[in-house]
Every structure is written in C-alpha cells, then in structure tokens.
Length: 290
Image (cartoon, rainbow, N blue to C red):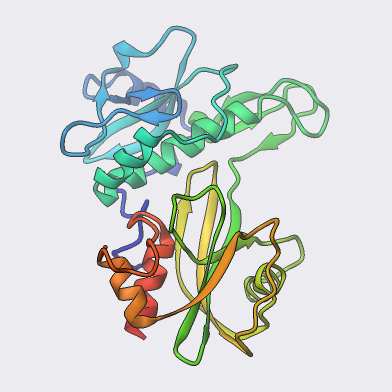
C-alpha cells in the first residue's frame, strides 16, 4: 500500500469477529474507556493538531445509537447514528480545511465513520419489499423484518486516470472547482465493465482520447458519499481533444515540469493541483516518478 494516499492508514481493528457476538458487543459498550466520535452532522470536530475529537458514550445524543467501528489500541470506538436526519453529500469549506490538517490515519478513521453513518441514513428502507430495515451486526448491516433480506454497506468503484502521450499527461477541470484547478479525469465503473474498460471508456467519452495499456497505481476510499477511487495511468493514441462539455469545462496536456510546479504550489504554475488528500495528487506524483 502506498503511504501517500489520503484517507488510508487508519490504525483500526475492525473486529469483524465480534459483530455477531452480542456478549462481546455488550462488553465493548460497557467498557469505561470506550470512545464516541464527535460529529456535527456528517462533519468531524478536530483539535488544533487535526486530530479527531472523541468523547465518552455518556455523550451519545438522544435518539441516536452507537455504531461499532472497532478497536484502536484495545479501546472500543463508536460513531453515533441518528436515523431520520438528512445531511446530503455537500461538503463545507470548513471540512476542506480540516481535511488539509488531518494526519492520514485520522482522515482514514473519519472516512470509515462518515461512510458508515451516511449509508445507514440512506438505507432505512428495504429495496426488495419497501419495509423498514433495522441495523444488526453491530451496525455493519441492516435487516428487513418483513422479508428477511439483509443489506450491507456498499462502495461504488470509480476510476481516476491520467492519459499519457509523448511525455505529457491529460488533465481536466469542472466548472464548480476552485479557479485554476485541474485534476485527473474520473468516472464510475459501470455494470459488466472491468477497470481497464472503464478507464478507456471514460477517457474517450469525456475528452475524445483513445487509450491502451492501462496500469493500476493505487486506490483510495472516498467518503463523499462512499466510493473506492482506483487510480490508473494509460497510454493515449493521440493528443487531439473533443470535450464532453457536460462533464468538463476544459482539458489540457501538461508536462512533468508543469506538474511539478503545480504540486509545489509555485505562483507561476500553469494550473492549481488537487489537494494532497485526493488520490489525484498521489497519481500526479506517481506519474512524475515514472
């Protein structure tokens, strides 16, 4: 595993062995050392060093229940779930600032907690029969009492890629991004599609560039709401661009020197780089090292 990928490296024992063990879960809940993550909606509270703020289970909000994240150093950790609240997937400017301060292991813990809470809030009803579902397995699944269907937290695979041609890499930007920022192209893997096929399809659809020889670089959990980003580099067959303007506002081919200037934050950089916690940042650094 690469050490420079954001939202990874959480030192969490997820304790799958105890999720179906009522006695073990009861003991974790009764443990005086047990910690509860402090959240404001879906956003974390952090201290001055970017560390997540934890409190005791005595501070569990009214009408909320604790979801078992696992153990850190033998201490059980939980996150509160209040069903019925709707937070959406919006991310505030304050959250972006916090992510920039968080050590990687803290961001990884937050990614796990946020994704789990968000999944519960969006899956209160059974997709098979429409009945109300209840959590079980210490919060890592939901069961429908009407039809007995069981549902588990899901992760949506997303490819994020650089197309390379004659020593340059293809970057794009969306209109909603901060001014000047460019990043790798990305898109969801569709049903019945491999990672390599998704890379080729998305690059062709968004930029009109055909690619081959796709190679995997790294992956990242992305908790907005719950995706697995799969970073790849591919060889382009040409550099002519035909943009899908519903997806991209602009796209450019950049050199390694231009990428290095952007990642270093130089004022004369041609574009603004994605933030360090985004796997696009890792992908650009990997490309520089090729």
